Image (cartoon, rainbow, N blue to C red):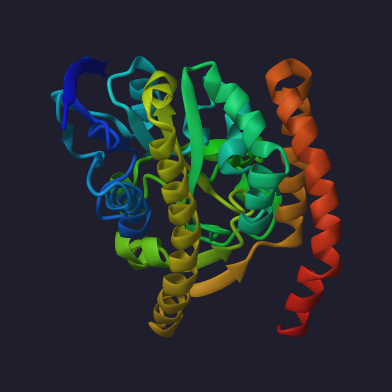
Length: 360
């Protein structure tokens, strides 16, 4: 059997490819992530993508994942958690796993890739992205950075954070020092909160030392792993700012276009699996973790008051309208997203919400 060999450039490194007449070429990619390995469900979603791609190509297409703490092979350095998009855009790495709302300084419209306060839950977000035109809208934004994105994980509705003191009214939020990121942080800031953006590794110490008085992360399972229940006792819900947090697999567009069509379909299929399984796993482990937290006698579940929720909702929609007036790209996504949201909320209000109320 005759083979022909040639080189192509990938992220600054030459990769030897051997093309056989009876098969696709072997390709090796690197995937930087915004996550430590200790976040085993999120990082586990990354591993699902890499494992499935290798399995479905009989090892011909390999993707090596790198946590935020790892030096990336061929790059000689770590990729910082909030710089994954930049590294993919520059072609330093072929792909990455991160959240769109980490890059709002590049485009406020990327918030919709992840989820916005009082937006879509996980089921609705998937409907919008896969069948409601949402993915096309988000991809138009990422294309400006030479990137194509794939939904690749979801946490579901998150919890509302750990507090050292009660917050019953909007007035109680004035001057509160809280760790919260993304658009939720922007809304909380409008309500008078002093917003702090801290990585997961710093939240416990800051809350313990009193540098902050409240902190949100994800939900019972991951919050328990960080030990937040040991330094704060009031556990608020729901996390209205992250109703269906979507993670993105980002791929350098030039690298994507070089892939054989078969490999493209396999990669896309692997991200579908990661998206579904991450949400399923979170729903499973969070129920167990919440039971442990509430049974330990130190954790008190507290629902956000209507006063705070109404104030937050008004602030959120005011922020969206302001962004839409000042940012044409944001307005394009926002108008399409809002029309979809109104329709699906009406539909879910008839069947999903009514059924849920029968069981509570």
